[in-house]
Length: 421
Image (cartoon, rainbow, N blue to C red; front, side, top):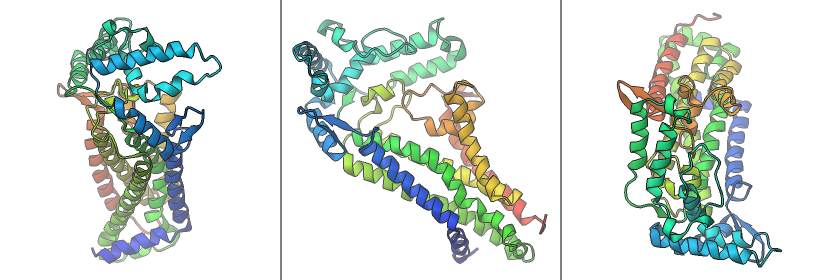
């Protein structure tokens, strides 16, 4: 197979007006999530003393500057200093009843530390509602040990008879979760990491919704040959049945690869360039509201890299499904529908509460792989041969293997098709 054959197949894909529309939609999707994570409702916001709400790079500069003195190891001294200010601003707020944002404006740089105090301040169970005002009820004498509280709350969640987790998880799974919680290395460090946080959030939407749009790009690779009445070429020559089919598969995977990495790099670099590259080496626990229950001991940089690689694997898996359906059914519409349903239906059922997110069957669907790193996602585990691991690890091998198998089936199906059959 020559490179020119692959390039020829790529050009056949790109010449279709529908594919150009899809590429434009993917570009717009990337631009939209960037705007939302930087300037939109999901973006970083900073409230000035004058009451002006800043967004984007201006908000990032203010927050980075304000958090500078609250960066570093979250030790007892830092928590006591933060607690003192929280109580001070709580009292001062009473003297400024006309200013509803008085306290918030002054504790913006302390919000992550305040979240640590709120989350670890009392021995409530994980399924109970979050109390936003626990921090102000603490004293220097009752300041909690954050790591001990994380483990204690998880123990309550896993072993209390009133918790559904008590009977759902096996003893091996409970031990695994507790070990994950206890394996965090070194003291907790806090600091500015908004760029990485918002880039990760944007990447999630690009992977999820982009995977649906991506199916349109490869859906016609095989199906259009039948529509164009050119499939006879592939069944009358040896190269057509073999090298031609391989060239099509290679073109589909190549186009998926180029589009995915171009889009993800664009989104990540745009957001990081505007909100800053600071904080990549911090543990994701430094953002406690989203990662208090995370079982992944990762830095912001590591999480972004792994999530991006997992997203790429998912896109390649969907590309293999779309091409197989395109070859077997000679239908571009069906080739788009099948992978879309695989990610949309389970997600719809979960968000409507129709199925349990932790059910064994639902854990194997690809939407779980997309959401695995999303903060506070329920503990999803697999137990194989007595070894417990996150379902994400199983999915990596599962989808990589399925991608290869589906590509081989696609090759066999198409090269043995009969013209008009």
